[in-house]
Image 1 (tube, rainbow, N blue to C red):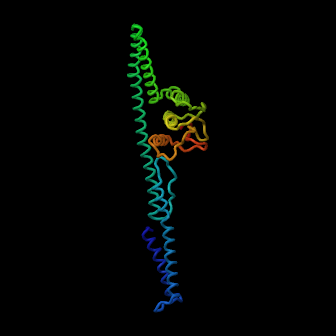
Image 2: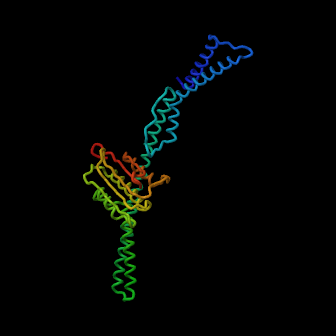
Image 3: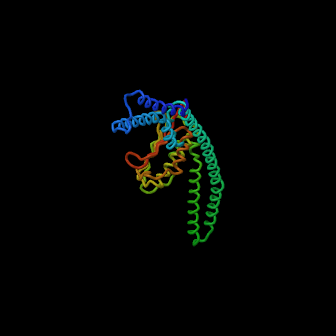
Amino acid sequence: MSLFWRIFLLNAAVLVAAGALLLLGPLTVSAPVVLTEALILAGGMALMLGANALLLRLGLAPLQRVSRAMTTIDLLSPGPRPEVAGQGEVAALIETFNSMLDRLEAERATSSARALWAQESERRRVAQELHDEVGQTLTAVLLELKRVTNHAPDPLREELAQVQEITRGSLDEIRRIARRLRPGVLEELGLVSALTALTTETPTPRGLTVRRRLEKDLPPLGEEAELVVYRIAQEAFTNTVRHARAGLLELSLRRSRHGVELRVHDDGQGVGDAPEGAGLRGMRERALLIAATLTVGPAPTGGTDVRLDVPVRNGSA
């Protein structure tokens, strides 16, 4: 039965019941109207409206749940679907809404995967060019400066030595940038070694202590999952180093009940009421690619706690 006919029949039933009570009941209406009769009619009208409102509320309650879901749904944080309730068009509408959410999440995951892997390919290309082109050019400049320094008069040697140090520092910085763009350690030595290199090679402010708890006996994750875990750890680590003003940063990677858990915790100023930025949304998109659960929020002891739970089924993520 359609929603129109259900509402129509509900109202008709209430009106017919009210008319039957007036026709078959002992009540009569005098002219002029007596106060008692007016009170009885007013009470009957209120009862009829209340019954009508209750029936409509029960009939339209599933639509209200769908409306709340529409205002709170976030494709980056999939949640439970609205329960299919009601009959006719109401149940069909809820089923269609749930199907639409499934389709939108699948399409977003596909487009995000393409964008992120294209980004990784571009990072790899830029890192390769920095290493092969700029790095080799600066290396040649250093060798030439060394040769010139050896043949330069004494007053110029000190200045040339300073130029050498500046060039050597620039070369080291370019190599660090290339490693951040393309984690070669991850491809060659694995996730644990890559996270160790991340915490040791990233410059940290004075007063920040970094602690690592990295288990080596972990279930296999696969190349894509390891890259996602590394990028999320890199983003969380960099955010803490740059913005948290923390004194302690803890990075842990361990075996969990359902797979692998990554956790980055600091005792800094926390996220507060700041709006979600591009970095956090990028972390959520990466987590969705491997069906992992990302939780970002304040820690019980203060600061920020980033946790990524990667499920492992059938021997791989």
